[in-house]
Image 1 (cartoon, rainbow, N blue to C red):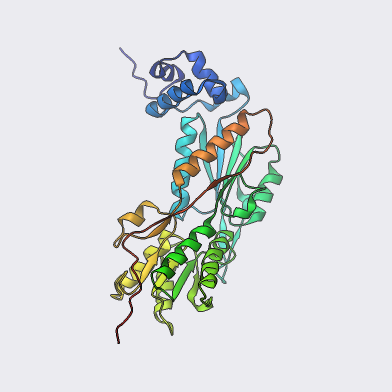
Image 2 (cartoon, rainbow, N blue to C red; image 1 turned 90 degrees about the horizontal axis):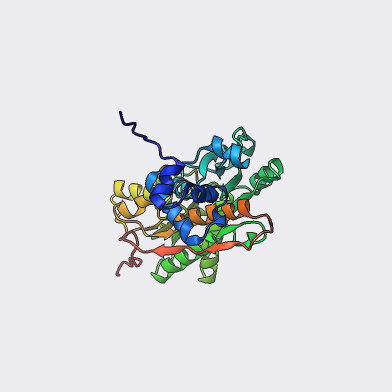
Amino acid sequence: MKVVRLVAVIKDVAGRAGLSVSVVSKYLKAPSSVRSDTREKIERAIKELNYVPSTQARALRTGKTGLISIISPNITNPFFAELFSAIQSKALQLGYTAILQTIPTVQKTDNSVVSHPFAVSSSSRVDGMIICFPDEEEIVSFLRQQWKCLPMVLLSWNAAKEADANIIVDVAKGTYETTRYLLGQGHRSIGYVGAPENSATSQEKQKGYIRALLEGGMAVRPEMIFHGPYCPETGYQAAETFWRGAERPTAIITEADIFAVGCIKYCHKKNIDVPGEMAVVGFDDIPMAALYHPSITTVRLPIGKLGDCAVETLRRMLDAKDQARQPAVHFDTELIERKSTNPAYVEEI
């Protein structure tokens, strides 16, 4: 009777790639030790076969587990779920297994949040760590203090963190360009919806909004800024607050697509035309943004490239004998114009 093997082993990868088992084994120990064309063949075979290396066998052979820890502040924001998926996919291609660990937060009555990095478990012995856009600098300090000898890759929103981060996305530039885009469309009353005020992410994004307003000769009005947790309800409440205010905005910028969804939901309920009476802009470009009605103008983050770069950077750290820090890699945002924005409506007299 023929036995059908459901789980791919190293021999299957070698056969699919047209290489010897020893070459594949060499790649799994240190991917950079084989030629680039050979590496591509192996990585393609691994992806096609959904091959996952045995962590026990690897640990015995190399002293490494092949496990990498992914530290995420908040997976209730779909952006982080998308980013983890991208990291996980690339990690598997390179022979690693990604373990997601979230940093718990406690919501306070003033809408701020407190993170608890000490809850991150070290029970699984990992080879390295990828820290994804932490909301508080203390989180990074804590993790580095706890695991001093562990290679770590830090992804940051702050362009000023060149000396500390490995991968940087200048989100302040994204909100700056978005605000200028709306000003260019004739909008002069622009609301802003952000995450909790003490969030480093929110503080960084809000800088771009404020800078663009000031450069455009506009006042920064506190009543036009709304903060809340990462959920559509925050966007809904923000739109409701703005619409009931003394001066209604003609456009709303949000720090996340899920906020934009909440804003548009309120507008639908109150028969407020989007974008005719209210333009709405999101941030992240999660799949929902293109599918929602109307499709959401948003700031795109290169999630796939971020995931690939994070894993590749960590792999180089793990392979390198010289742990000298390399310059940070920078990624740009991109404004994606869809159906939720229009030039400001000016009522004829």
